[in-house]
Length: 168
Image (cartoon, rainbow, N blue to C red; front, side):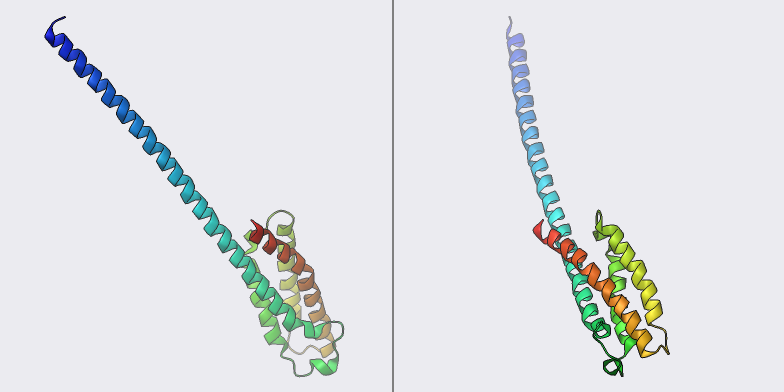
């Protein structure tokens, strides 16, 4: 073996060692990048979860306000209590809830999605009936009671969804 062959072998050996070291560093950086990617995905999922929880909470607040407004038309109301009540203002409050529900309808999953869709359709129809000018107090009471019952029946569905999001 002459000197040039030995130098060639040493250079080859050094090149192989440098290549292995480069591969080790590359693997280490890939693992670090994957770890960073997983961390970013967790943060993204947490932000989405918090946003959804906030949106459902907002919807729940609007539902509670709507129930408080429309409850004057409940079963124990009288024509005397209903005189002077601005039913169009109350209809506007319920409509605000309905618009928000429509915006957030995709937050409902599984069996709750058809319930939310059904409430949306039902409230649209009931508000059309309730918002008509010139209705008698008895007709307003009957329409308002139907809206109140629909909102009350949906309240546990919404509360369950809110609790589910908070517990995640």
